Image 1: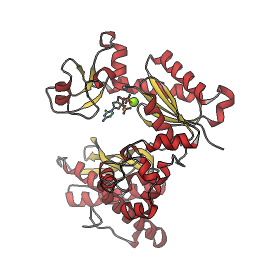
Image 2: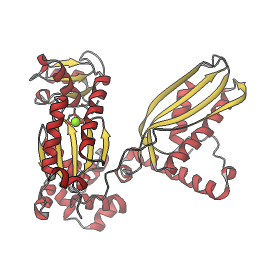
Image 3: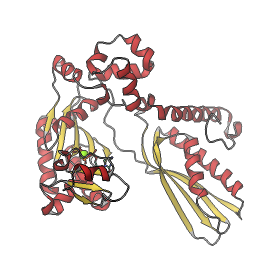
Length: 393
Ligand code: DCP
Ligand code: MG
C-alpha cells in the first residue's frame, strides 16, 4: 500500500512572523538577519525581497545592494520558536505521525487518517486553513507517496499553496527528468560538479544512464541513491522525533584537579562514552556541551554546534577540548562533564556519503564503530584510544 505523505513548510517563516506582527511591513521587502552595515548574513526574507534576488545565507551587505528599500530586522528567535510550537500543535491534530525537520518544516504521514479527514488534498487545505486561523501565517504543503517527492512538491507549492505530485508514472518521471541534478536530495556542491562534468546535467540523464558508468563515477551506494531518486523512489518512513533530548556523562573527582592535561584526558574518556551511546541508539548530534564545576561549586556550561551532524568520538573530543581550552583554570576542578544535544536519527547517511567535507566524518565514524564492536566483544579496556582527534593522526 502506498503511503500518503505531506511535507509542510512555512513561507518566508521569520519574515512572515515579522510582517504579521507589524502590519506596516506587509507587502514590503523585509530582510531578517544581520544589519546591512555589519558583517553577517540574511536568515530569510519576504517574497517581496526575493524578487530583487535576495536569498537566505547571502551577506547582508549584498542584500542591501540588491534591495536598498528593504527593511532589515534582527531575528527574534523566541517569537519564531513560539510560533513553531503552535504550528506543530496544529499538525498533531491531523496525524499522530509528525516528523519535525526544522523550526518551520515537517513531514506528516496521513495514510491512517484518510477516513477521518478525507483525501490528502483535503487534509492539506484543512491544515493550512487552521494555521491561518490560529497563527495568521502562510504555509505551503506538498503531497506525494514518499518523503522525497513530498518535499519537492512543497517547493512547487510555494508560496502559500498546495501541490500534489503526479501519480501517473510517466508524468512523474517526466517532471523529475526536467530537474537539474543539483535539486536532488543529497547532491551538494561537490557532487553536483562531478556529475555535471561527467555530463549528468538533468535528472533525465540519470534516468537514462548506464548504471555501471555512474557507479564508477560516484560509487555503488551513491549511484543507487541517485538512480532511485531519479525515478522518484524513496523508502524512508516518517519517523517520530527522538525522545531522548541529550546524552551526557560527567565525572566528579575524588580530589579537585588543576592539571589541564589530566582534565583533557578525563574529558576525552567522557566524550568516547557519550559517542558510543549516541551510536548505539542510532543517533547523530548537532551540539556539544561541556560542564565544569569549580572547587567552590560554581558551575558553568559552554556549548557550540558541530559543523555538521556527527556521531563519532573524534568530533566530540575535538569540540569538547576546544570549548574547555577557552576556559581559564581559575581554580581547581571538582567535576567535568560532556554532553551532546539536538539529536536526530542517523537516517540521512547516504546524503552525506559523497560530499567531500563528509568523507573525513565518515572515516571517523567508521573507526569509532569499529572500536565499539571490539569493546563489545572484549570489554571496555580492550582498546585505549589515546588522545587522537582524528583516525589519520
Ligand atoms: N534560516 C536561517 N538561515 C538559513 C536558512 C533558514 O536562519 N540559511 C531560518 C530562517 C527561515 C527559517 O529558518 O525563515 C526557515 O527556513 P526555510 O528554508 O524554510 O526558509 P523560509 O521559511 O524563510 O522560506 P521558504 O518560503 O522558502 O520556506
Ligand atoms: Mg520555510
